Amino acid sequence: MHGAVTLRIDAPPEEVWALVSDVTNTGRFSPETIEAEWLDGATEPAVGRRFRGHVLRNGRPPAYWTNCRVTDCVPGEIFAFDVLGPRDRTMNSWRYEFEADGAGTSVTESFRLPANPAMKLYWAIFGRARGRTNERGMRETLERVKLAAEESAR
Image (cartoon, one colour):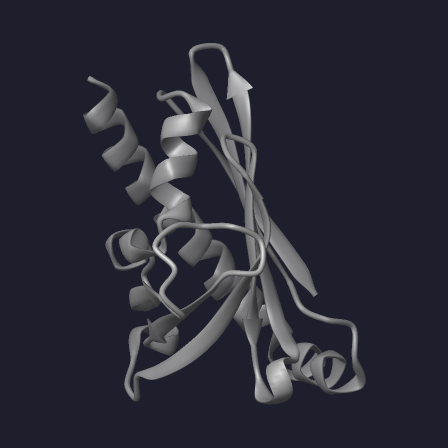
């Protein structure tokens, strides 16, 4: 109940991390999240900070909002967050890892669903299709980040 995609970007880890960890950029990069905004007066990432994303699942209406909480935040290295459901339960965990690769960065985007009975049932029924959709979405997201990072690094 997880997946990952890695892509090399010709820009330093700190610059790529800054693009990804600023959730207000999410709509530029994600094929499913139209926009995102910080909550509770936050303006930058830190562990425990919350934001919400406006999502078009599979690129189709209806759009809905999801609340998220930053779980890992190390500039130039890691940015991760949980998508929250009812009673702030984790519905999905997303993680970006940044590793220096010569003059550039190897970025891995990944997701992991919690191993509870409801998610195991969901994955058994929809997992193969949703996993492919997530993989395409992660690849598209990283390609868009790559374009933005490499353009600003010039």
